[in-house]
Image (tube, rainbow, N blue to C red; front, side):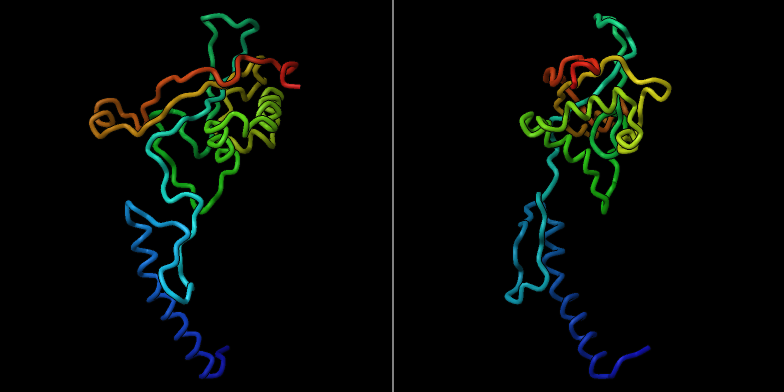
Length: 193
């Protein structure tokens, strides 16, 4: 049902103004020197907003692994949990997940930035992994222990950077990672309480 002509003219006029004013924020978003949370006109109708102007090409990542082994030795086989959006497997192409917000992946990124940030939730998260908690596992891309939960889990910190074109062509990797250190040593369910 169409409205009165005067109303349609106003709606089309405001729509055209928004499209016109969107040019500068759109140009800014495509720029390598983005301005975030900036105003591009005096009316403040169309602007940019974002927590971060861009995603860095290097970052630290917490990698969570588990094992079925009853004792930890140098020969222990560790299997990696895979997250939906964050870096992990260096051969996995970085996914496009927008407009979704993968909250757990986001929390894991902040955990790598500051262990103090993860203090209240990280150990309970590990405990849920050791119980094969279905709602928690639904937040992950892959559970390496579908049949029975792991006996131990651990978390290690790695430094990731995007692979160069030559590295990508030679080895097929999207990321290059280097070991930084232990984030959480191997723990059992009793240690996470």
